[in-house]
Image 1 (cartoon, rainbow, N blue to C red):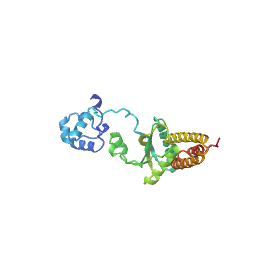
Image 2 (cartoon, rainbow, N blue to C red; image 1 turned 60 degrees about the vertical axis):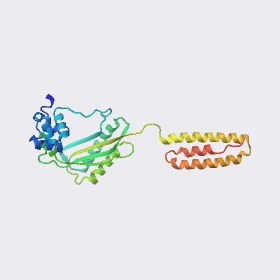
Image 3 (cartoon, helix red, strand yellow; image 1 turned 45 degrees about the vertical axis):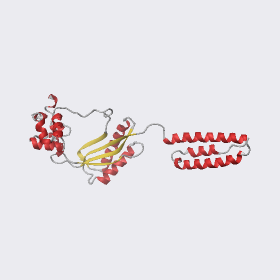
Image 4 (cartoon, rainbow, N blue to C red; image 1 turned 135 degrees about the vertical axis):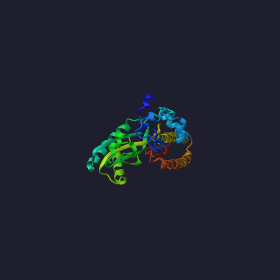
Length: 276
């Protein structure tokens, strides 16, 4: 508790939004008020002000108590962010493009250093214009809700391999199409979030390719045996070959784009052997 005594209320998780405003309005505390001023309220008093669940949460929070379960694997970053604040603000396209490129490269480097078993689905772009007159004063006082507003936009993360070039193109598109006023720009941030696991193991096309080629080889060997044992098997084999080619052709239609070598292998295996 001693560690929490002088910590401002604005630093407590969950008290930066509506819950924090409701608490300050009911207790007369300010954003910069230390936690020790909140410690004088009992659990019952806080629950009477905020409700049972929220009151208990605030009572625990100002004492440094967190009852959330720690889950295995939850320490992996949920978001990667690269940002830069500009003072004075930048006001030219060339300078903005230079920072977009630099921040994109930094973000891509961080993504490459990740475990490699997941990919981001969302790209986040934050843009802040000219600073309000009282921005610095509010920042010093910890009044984060009164700082200059930032425009945040989200789009799909570029598909394919992660690269700085595709990230730069996506960020430029978001800024041009979805940010009303680009200049002046006092802060720019680019982030990747909403991660999903990438499936591991052999590709589906490789699995089917192996099975089909194996089946074709067995078919060809069986045809050779029949042909050697009976000269009349020519007609039977031709019928079987046509039927097999139809099956192979049907399968190739579905898999030709994913496995280009499948069709060539099926034609070679299905061709009738010369009579002995």
